[in-house]
Length: 58
Image 1 (tube, rainbow, N blue to C red):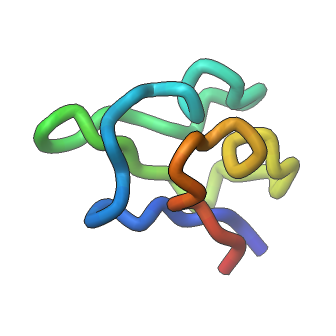
Image 2: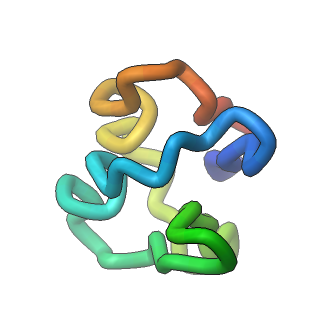
């Protein structure tokens, strides 16, 4: 399992990236973020920090 960011809902705040313990979240187009699902350790820190709840478990 891993987490995924809905890029249509992402507001490019970077909150998720700042709390990721394995640094698997990176900036993509327009400052939005994407999670490397292969590197994600399924901790949920990013989802808990997201102010718009656009991160979900897949």
